Image (cartoon, rainbow, N blue to C red; front, side, top):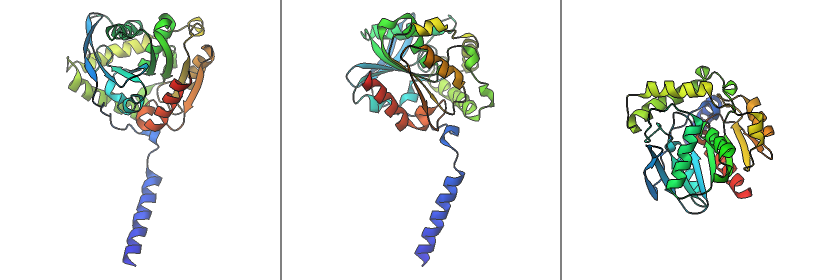
Length: 280
């Protein structure tokens, strides 16, 4: 009887915990770590040093992280994708372990860094899976350098600054910005400059991108425009606008996740990416 009562107490406790558990879109799971790379280092690109790592073999897939973040955020995706593809991750200029110069941050410049790394690795054409700023870099390449891009999975991008919500009101996004400060301090070649870094990235966000309807209509790369149904940063109408404006683009709204879907529900995110890559 005592064992039975203990079991009942544990069950009641579990159910109560589940009842009070926060929805996953209101959580910011820990930043994962990357698996052991087959190759990694600093590539001389555009007068700076871009940190990169490669995993697996097969058709190349480049994972591009969001603003303020670093390539470690792809730690749940790399092992799955590397079973079938050659996966390349990189830290964008001034982010993570990559350096920068005095030029202001801009999507066109940062996209040229991606192309420069592709040249360094002798990759003529690749698929891109991008998150937030990384997805915008994918759109930038699709618009201006389509010959270098085979497919684009664009998660949580925006086509112009008016599509961004007031993230100051989001506890999840505030927690991400605070975490990014700690990670910047640990990884950057210029620790202690996070506030300046944040200010400069914020200036880019306030003024870029500015893709016209004609530019979106000119995209010929097989593309999915993807977002979480609880994205705290990007307005849904802009996601739908981009998907409608890019010829043949797919629209996918992932359930019960936010701007950080790949951390909150990596299985769902990975299945969507693998399905997209396999079908095009």
